[in-house]
Amino acid sequence: MAKKQFKAESKRLLDLMVNSIYTHKEIFLRELISNASDAEDKLAYKSLTDENVDVKRKDLKITITPDKEMRTLTVSDNGIGMSREDLEANLGTIAKSGSGQFKADLSADDKAADKIDVIGQFGVGFYSAFMVADHVTVLSRAFGSDEAWMWQSDGADGYTVTQCEKDAPGTDVIMHIKANADEENYDQYLETYKLQELIKKYSDYIRYPIIMEVEDYRQKPKPEDAGDDYKPEWETVKEWKTINSMVPLWQRQKSKVKPEEYNAFYKEKFGDWQDPLAVIHTSAEGAVTYKAMLYIPAQTPYDFYTREYQKGLQLYSSGVMIMDKCADLLPDCFRFVKGVVDSPDFSLNISREILQHDRQLKVIATALEKKIKSELLKMQKEDREKYEKFWAAFGTQLKYGVVNDYGAKKDLVQDLLLFWSSKENGYTTLAAYKDRMPEDQPYYYYACGESPDKIAKLPQVERILDKGYEILYCTEDADDFVMKALMEIDGKQFKSVNDEDALPQTEEEKKAAEEKAEAGKPVLEAVKEALGDLVKEVRVSAILKSGACCLTTDGPVSLEMEKYMNKLEGGQHMKADRVLELNADAAPFAALKKAVDTEDKDTVAKYSKLLYGQALLLAGLPLEDPAEYTQLVCSLMV
Image (tube, rainbow, N blue to C red; front, side, top):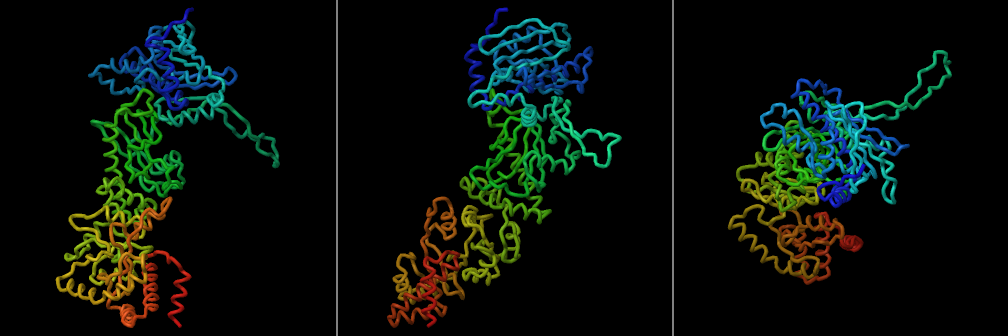
């Protein structure tokens, strides 16, 4: 029989289809199974609308049959089947979707139409078979017909349609798998383990059983006359097995899903060995219909804070996996969340691997943001121990969420932040801090350092604590960035204890400080001369109460920022302008003044370097020359 040519400029379109549309060749099985599912759906729909059609949904199935000897892979269904005209129309015209036309033909007021959800839209999925096959045969018999037809093609050269025999209605797609190429392993598509893997990955939630004959190992029955020394024997058996789960966990009612089922799904799907801290099972109907099941892990993945880590939720369209990690559904601050989102409303491109429009995604992403925050706030209030476990794992990521994108998500995140409280001697939220704040307290106070114990001993926190004000102890390198990004809450700013204006001064206090600074000017100049370029300025401190010295900065770059940036790849990205602050009321200042007055430059230099070294240690910075500092201390002890 003469070959018929494809319509719609077939050679160019089929070549584009096979070589350009799909990212991965393994997608072919997803597409053919989805087509088979549509065929089952159409017959199920027919049984609802035609009383003469006696078909039970439980009898519908999809069968996968690999044959290594013949080098064929067959995908069979017992669905609606196709007549000769259907084969000509659907397989003879590329990008003509039978499922799409079927859906379009459904009456808008037909109640039964709500019971069916066909997957195919574009009419190109079938041709993905040519990515792995050099010849494709389709045997089909339409339901209610005694005639069967065979469609055959080697690809873009055209196709033939001839009459054939087929025992029952339905369709068999028989692919002759290509020989291996230099960089392509086509043999894998004849291996049952690989086929099972692809079914579980892409088509696990197709609503009909996908069955395949697989090898299994089982212990032989123990013979009745076996003695005590009998050793169990194993045998290989072949059995037909349903590969897919069919009903996704997220499609079930929350009240009917047990916690252990949620946990088992999470561990299997996302490769974690610990139970998640929380599960968010949600759905919505309206402008965009979707179901989602999200998990908050108990621990950070090993690569979480690396460039290799990829955020995202698994994306399903009507139970078929479209994307393994859809990054657009999660903001970076919640990149630790795992889960799935399933919606029939996504606008997919022709390969069903990429979304054409992001309107639906934005609607869903906004709703999920609120759900995640709500769940975390609930955990924070109702199970503080669990929340602090979460915070230990992912608190740093939430802090990054405050800083990233110029603070675009700080309002979303700030209620979730925890900081160590000087008053509570434990973690506090910003809201709880605010509730404890005295009426006369002008700012949210914070201090940065290595640990709460070390921060509490910093000389610059003394004056704030003596006022009875609470300080947030910040122990992570990024915290100074976070506080500056937060800026203020309800009109009250965040202030570092290092800021000179952290405690407002009266006019009398300002005048006294100016007089003290003027009186100490000769000492300050002498110390600056001794230290040279190590510091930008030496000043009489307005932030020290009993401590002798401390190190602050002049300008936008703080010491904490410098430390953080220097830890990044490459280092030395930022340099703070260092300021040595001296307490004019402390004994060391008096000793310095005596040395200056007696023009003992050697002693001035030693005292200056000693105080600068102390200030470095207090600030958690390394001594630039520890050996020199040690010798200096020893020389002053003689």
